[in-house]
Length: 514
Image (cartoon, rainbow, N blue to C red; front, side, top):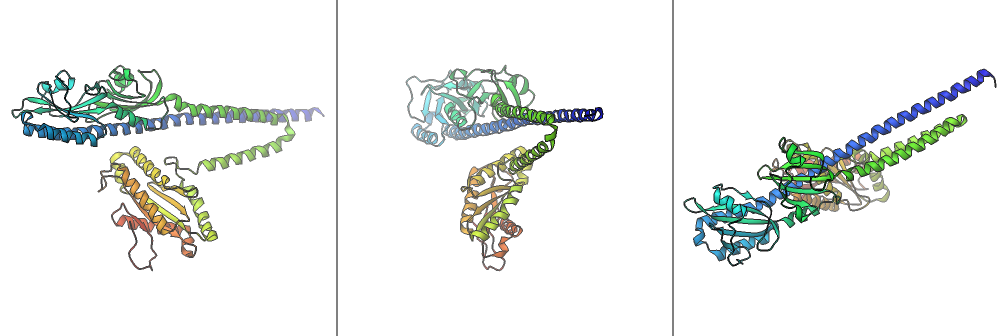
């Protein structure tokens, strides 16, 4: 081998090594960027999840207190009308007992006179010499003529020994002077049981506090923590003075564990709801992804180094890399078939599956039911509650739709925006209408607030179309979707919150609806 050829081979070898090193640097940079974005995305999703949990907690607590307060308003009005000295205790006790049986959050209902003596309880049992004049809520109402509701700190019930949250109102005499107190006690265990229903890790935390940081409820439940203050924690010390709601990655002042916290101050009650998702749980999937990425990068580096050392295998190894790239594209395409917000199939997958299902209609001679769903007045919902709440509403409806895809071949999909579809292979019109009605009712039963809707809650309209093997016009994707859309339009024109089936123009009679 002459010097020129040797130099050429050396240059080729150096060029190959240089290209390999450059390629490895690019791969490392891209993988590092992807891991960085994945890390940010994990915490972004955790912020959203924590915010949603806090909003759910705040709404649940507010509803529980409002129900109790509405009851107290009636008790106070009746007590002031009759006068405590002339109050029919037996009739009032019966009324209180019935209300405690209706509202699960209630521990008890009580009426005290101006001196703190027990007059009426829901249980009908009044301990000898029982007096609550030393309670904070009683002293508050005695010293303040505020007619509004008062929420106190957690206390231990003298009747049962349970931890309760006192909710009370002042009772006035005819001349406006202090006559007594009407009290509803809410069970701390009721809220703990509610938090326990969330599918979260054991390190996640939910806390309900007084405006000054005094803990009323906390999950995980630790009895010694109830009644203590977290006013010196970062949320109360640094964040709440600046904003009523927000998120922050901080360490807990209770157990020292780092969490992604979401907090929200109640607008009408002196309370703060806090939800925390464990930072360790947030990072764990990312760490696993990092380990896999490192292993993959090591393998790529070793294989690339071997490729660089064996120049004659360049073509074969290039083909291998190309094949691996195609497989990666296939895997990426597979992951791209799911809608990120709802977890349903996305439009791309729907466009792939629907022609296949129509082909199966022709092969198996079995019908194909298609349900098209649209959330009623969704633009008004977004305008009123914001896009985050709008996304949550779409997720809730998507969850209902997915729950009705009970067979492996059923396919729930997000068609676009607030529109969704459900493919039901083998379902005729009656089957499809029944399922559509079930979805409509299930969404209605969620009772999700929507003040922009005449019904006051989120509802959906659904259109049903069925492709039969003997109807050639139904075996076209565009025609079938148009039929479902026409039926959906009919449901909306009938006032929304309806499910209608498509009928061909030459068929007499009104369209069926439920």
